[in-house]
Structures are given as C-alpha cells and as structure tokens.
Image 1 (cartoon, helix red, strand yellow):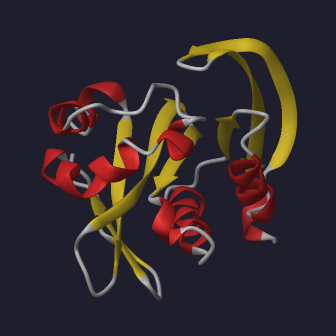
Image 2: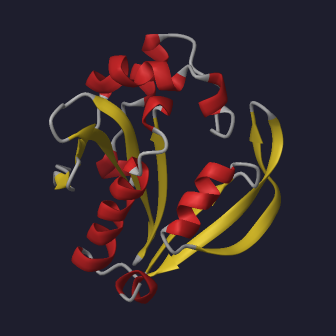
Length: 176
C-alpha cells in the first residue's frame, strides 16, 4: 500500500519505514516520552528498526512519518489502524524537542482531514493513559470527546494501567 503524502503549512507526512529508525531512535529511548507508550524505551537501534517495519496490507495499519516541510528527517509519526468499516484508531508520537509548537495538532489534523473529508469515515478514536495529560489535552483541543475509562486495560512496562477512550465523529470534525 502506497500512502499519500500529506502536507500542511509547516509539515510533510510521508510513509514511515525502517529507514527512519536512526532519526526516531532518540525519541524511542527517551524514558519520559516512553512512559505512556505501550512498551518500554528501546535499548538499541535494531529494536527501533524492527518496530518501524510493518505490513500495512495485512494489518490495516498506516503510518506517516512527520517531517518538517524543509527537511525529510522524521521527528515523529501518526498511525491509523482500520478497525471496521468507517472506524479507525489514531495514535502518534513526537520527539520531545518539537513539543509545544503545535506540530502534533497540525499533523493529526491533516490525517483527520484525510479520514473524514477524503475517505468519508464516520468515527475516529484514540486511547491514552489517564495520566498522559499532554495527549489528553491534544485530543480535547482537536475536538475529541472523552467517552469512557477502561479499568486495568493495559499491561505495560510501568504496570497495569487504565485507559481513557476518546472519540471524534465526522460531523463534529467537519462542523468545528
């Protein structure tokens, strides 16, 4: 599956792959950034390379590397996982040095435009740790609504964790 290249005023989103491992490895080894991730910080470059190797045709996952418009070096990613007709899950990661500049909101917004405006999906959801205030703030800023809490949902490197589920409907995105 060839992903479309998505562009914004400052960013270019293109297909991600193992060739992005070197650029993204520092983020994947960042203890604080990885606290809320589903797996522990990576210990070597080979682990990051393996992590960025996937088969979108078989697992319904699409991942875009986030790059600055003027530089093709990956600084994060946005992933969409097809769950069922008209419904997808979104996830994301951004290297710490790019936090606070609105880049993740810009990148996820562009992907949401693709999903809702171009593909006509009806619902996109995200799950995040209740203590991940940065992610929760981003989702709420983009118009996602808190739909519930699943208790003891994930077993992660920091223990068994609850998850907060956020959802966004097509009409909510188009009418915001």
